[in-house]
Image (cartoon, rainbow, N blue to C red; front, side):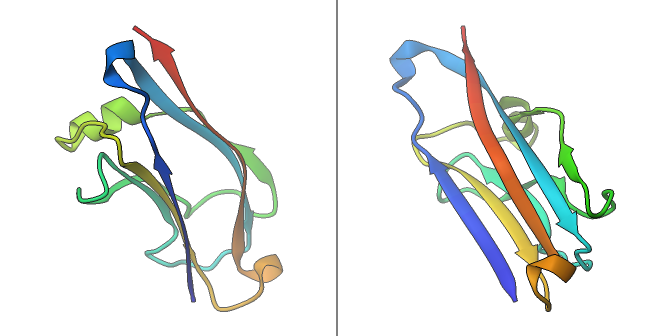
Length: 116
């Protein structure tokens, strides 16, 4: 079964010149089995192609992990995309068993920016 959470971020009006968006979060790998759906993707708009930002696989299991900040501007630019009013982040996970033996937990999701 595939589980997906999609967050659409309504970017503030461009006249405020805010950029340098970043993502930070904690996650817990509860013995998650391998799946190509165990990733985080982003895209500049709701019609753009999804870009893989992070792959959950290969992390320490049964421990909460705080990852370094992900620079969203750079990730989008590297894929030829930019922010729009329908920027999206997608958290994906797939598994066959209950969370405690085949799942991923996400907490403390923070999306921030720095004014220019």
